[in-house]
Length: 193
Image (cartoon, rainbow, N blue to C red; front, side, top):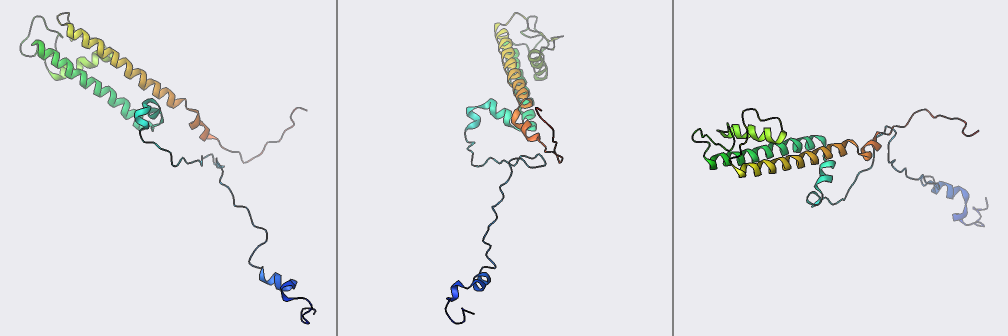
């Protein structure tokens, strides 16, 4: 009634203020922040904008540990196959250089190495230390003794790196942190008293 007589200005009338602010809530809800770990146990942390360039060449072992299991197993298998093939080629060249491939010689460097296949089998026998059976090295070639030593050292290095990588992958703690699951029921108990 006072507003009609212009004693109270229009902008101070309570009914008008309430009518204007119907759509604008005075108390705003805070935006919900995402949880780090969801109630289902899933980890909601995503690593973004992390530079990965050149990391492989700087730290090969950590990169092997961080790879997925299928990639690790492929690298594990391929490292052995490639080393066996490389040393099979070297053993074949040793036999070729000594003249063991043409005719059956009385003093071969490696007995029963007559083809690349037999050189490959001998390479596996040397690196995995299965046993020599019919194929064995003789003392006729000092070069063959050197190749044997180098292949054993390379095989030990491959074994150490790959087994260390697999051990580290199974013992990683940050992957175990993703297995947290929250219970639907709270447990309440008296503590210290």
